[in-house]
Image (cartoon, rainbow, N blue to C red):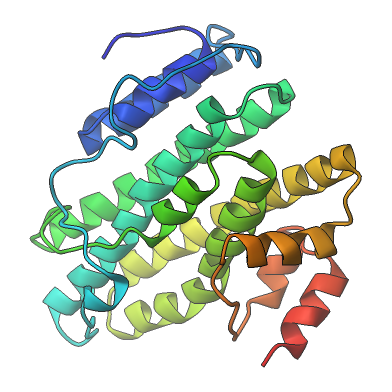
Length: 269
C-alpha cells in the first residue's frame, strides 16, 4: 500500500485495503504516525477514491440479515458463529471510522483525531475477536455475514450530519443495548474469554457513540438545528430502523444521550 502522510488520504488508503490483517496493521501504523506528529489532517484536501470502497475480502459472503442463521450457544460452532458475526461488525466498524475521516472535509482537526481513535479501537476489537475465532477452530470468512451497517454508511455519504445521527448514535448505539445479553450468554456457555472481549468492546463503544453524539450536537449548533427534532427528520428521511428495547440506558447516558432522549426511548412501544 502506498503511504501518504496526510491523515485523510492515508485513511482512504486504509479503507480500500482488502486484506483484514493488512488493514488492521495500516490503521495501527496510521495511528502511531499521528501520535508522533507525522500524519496531520488537511481538512481542505480534495480526495477521490481510486479503488472500491470499502476494501474487504472475498469472504464472508454477504447475505440478507435474516439469512445469517441462528447461533446456538450450547455448541462450539454456534458460539463461533456469534464470534464471527461480532468480528464482521467490528471489521465494518473499522471501515466506518475510516470513511468518516476521509469523506467529510472542512471539519475541525479534533473531528479527524476522534475518528482515528475509533478506527484504532475497532481494529483492536476485530483482532481480539478474530484471534478468539481462530482458537475455536475457525477463521473470519468461514460463515456468512450481512451488510446492514455499511448500507447506512452508503446512504449518508452526502451529509456528515446524517452520518453522525444515523450511524454512531443509531446503529452503533444499538450495540450498547445488545452487548450485555450476548456477553451473559457467552459467559453462561462457559466462554469466559469471549465474555471478557465483549466487556472491552462495550467500554470502548460507549466512547465511540459519545463521539458521534458530540459531533452531531456540534453540527446541529453550526446549522441552527434543534437536535431532537433534526434527528426525527433525518431518521424519517433516511428510513433509519425503528429503535426497540430493551435499552441499556446507563450506557447510553454515559455515551452522551440527553435525559429527554432517554425518556423518549423509555416511552417507546
